[in-house]
Length: 172
Image 1: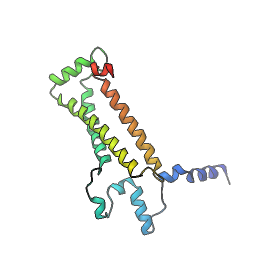
Image 2: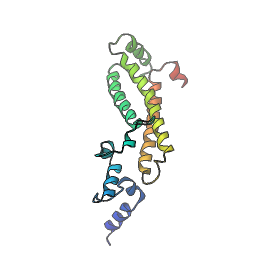
Image 3: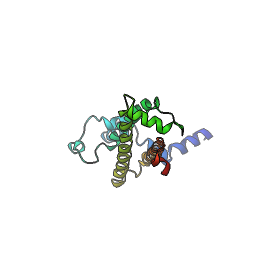
Image 4: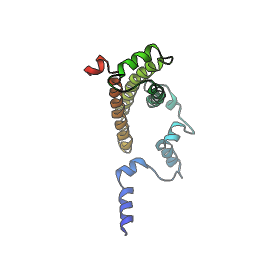
């Protein structure tokens, strides 16, 4: 057996590989169901759904809400980027001018409240995943990605909290 075949066998048989690629070719009804559950696109837009799977609950679509908030934060952040200078001498004055003089000053409030909502929805989503045990094998790779995204969300929220360079940011 060559070295490349041995390395590829070790990779394919690893837990990480099985966490990402969870099943074989969908030639049976069971494998078709597994293909839908493990594929993000087919999971979000399945061909058939049980009635209980569509029932609205309090944790329904927290990941989707978080993604929508991410998109709105990206859009408002790019728009705010044109009016803000991230230096200690201009930061506070730019925020005041943005709030009072700029026509799209409401974008700052949309951005700020969207950031607070995103932190809350990401926490709720991770809490639901934890309570339902969705982090267990074979989904530990998804859990790892989710933890990284949670930490990134908290880090970006904190750094965004510091950007106005007001009294709250100084004492944070």
